[in-house]
Length: 609
Image (cartoon, rainbow, N blue to C red; front, side, top):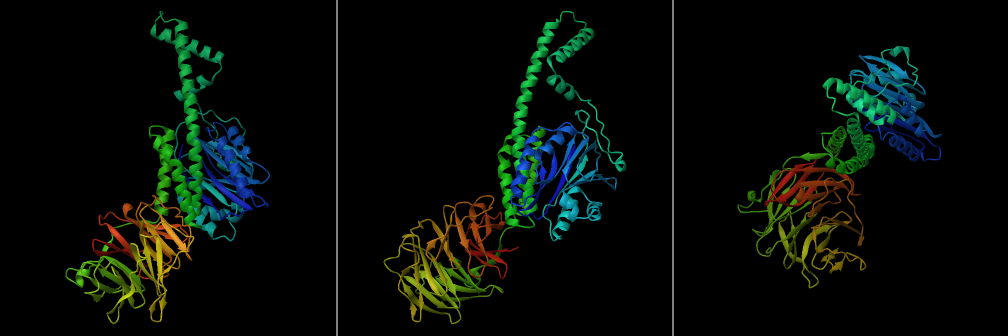
């Protein structure tokens, strides 16, 4: 039987918890109440027992009951399982719970309390399993209205929205299984009695063995005496059909015995491989279900679960083919997880668009360095030895400095209405409004090694010295700037030789050429670990943030993207492009919704979504 599955999980607590189960052979719900506050732990233990018992497909209602019984204990309030086998559906409730059937637009309650039922599924059926708490939170008419004229997946989305509107949804969970296609089965008819509701008389428990695969399986599992009888009967039939008296019974018995051994070995190997596949798929499915359920409540955690599910399934996906049933299941689950990640990752594609060209101000002007504050950009032009300012909202620009004294222009910074330029002999200050330059407000000293970044923060000037692995600080005074000071504490000795740049928002942030993001707070290193980034960062990372923006923006040019993290390291989104322009730096204005990239001597932009 081919099915589509929708699942719904409420907002669990440490006392009241529920979760859905999705394995290659069965789907279900577990609900737990534990006053000691370990409901989730107990629930996961129950799910573990159930999934372990489902490593092989059940072939009778009794087996499904045994599986459900394995997960029950005094804290487990609901276990509801549905197992499609061929054209038959087995359903079991332990504890509380409800099972509905939608067929041809009609609804019926199959089970409303502990019990078991089985019957023939038909294309279009939707079987709805709910935990005990779900039935108390969502009224029956609300559930039916959500499923009307909808698929199982669409209905699950409606129920999730309905559940989110409830004041308390702890312990609520539901599985919706829609029958997409019915495949004939070689599973024997169930022998367990069924308490079948009269309102669903068409849900009958009748199935027959018809396939050759079923005959072979029964022969392999039969006892030796029955195997001998079967072989003798077929030998007589063969001799009658082919009239070949030279074929001796011992020879045929030997051949059949050899085939039996081969079938047995193949079955053992297949069973072992199937167990491995099922174990991996069960774990990946659990994380996938958790991830999709968390997306509305906590998108960051939801993405983490989805990425973990993909990582777990990846080795199995690479090892299987679509020529086997198990392989197709693995590949189908992987595609579902990958699709969910793509949607959840907020990955936006599109090439950066031209934003500003210094040729508008000077015929041969190029942009070699950039800084931003509020609505103003300051651009450095090393080729033309000039400084430009650009108003971000309207993109009007002007030349604010240049000529003699601007040789070897390397970096610019901005604070208020004053721009700063790092030159070979020191730092110049430029009044943007008056377009006047004060040369060497900070002079180069013998302590400087190789300066690889200039930042103005709080009116002070900071220089990143990758040559000596130091951060130099110059404090603003009434008459200019103080003498050189060290920002880093004496016991903080990082290796800054691979730095790509520096930005400050109260903490100091530095990207590196070996794929690291360094953070220093109050002169001490403050470890920073990105979480949920997929694919992983490349080697060369350039960072932008400030006290005006809420997030961290990382230019990962090797992967042609800008990744957005919050300042705790959680992944938020990414912007990906195909352009071959090698971008070298970036600044961001969240106020104006722009990511500005420096590349090819020009400024390009991406819209923040």
